[in-house]
Image 1 (spheres, rainbow, N blue to C red):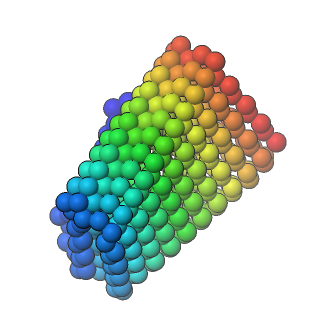
Image 2: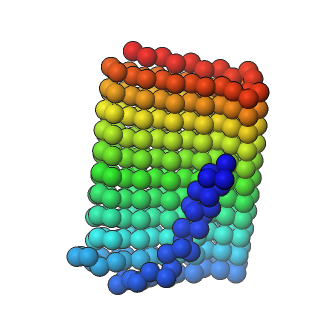
Length: 288
């Protein structure tokens, strides 16, 4: 459990951890102290091995703002922080070329925000953290290319959030954690390509969440863990191709969860374990 908390903390702090890095193009935008209905457009274009960085902060009861970030070139970094009761904001991040990083943090009672991240090319990373009582947010991450990584953490009493992750290409990794009393969230992960990995963890009194993972390609791996009194969650895993592996673990008083695993192709392996006082769970494994 300590590992999961450290992972989630890293997602939430990804914005602050990069402030000290050297940059060639740097854009900083801050909207704060009850500032509403602003429109911000940031465009950065640079070629070669330079570093483009955009940082946007919306905080202190600042609502209904519209932010658009467009970055083109290598080594692109975009960080968006929505904090302290800032709601109904819309953020769009579009990164085009290699080695992109996008970090989005929605925390401290910030509700009804919409974030769209679009990354196109190789070596992309997207970090999304929703925490500390932040509800009803919509996050859409779209990655197209090879060696993509998507990290989503929802925690500390954050409910009714909707997260969609769409990855196209080979060697993709999707990691989702819903922890610390975060309930009724909806997460949809779609991976299309070979050598893809998806991990989902629901833990610490997190109930009524819905997670759907759809993987299409060869050499696919899916892992799901539901733990520590997390009840009534719904998880669906669909793997289509060959050489699939699916692992599901439900443990530590986690009950009444529904897990469906559908594997279509040759050389499939499914491993399910229910333990330590976990009752009334329904597990359906279908291999073709």
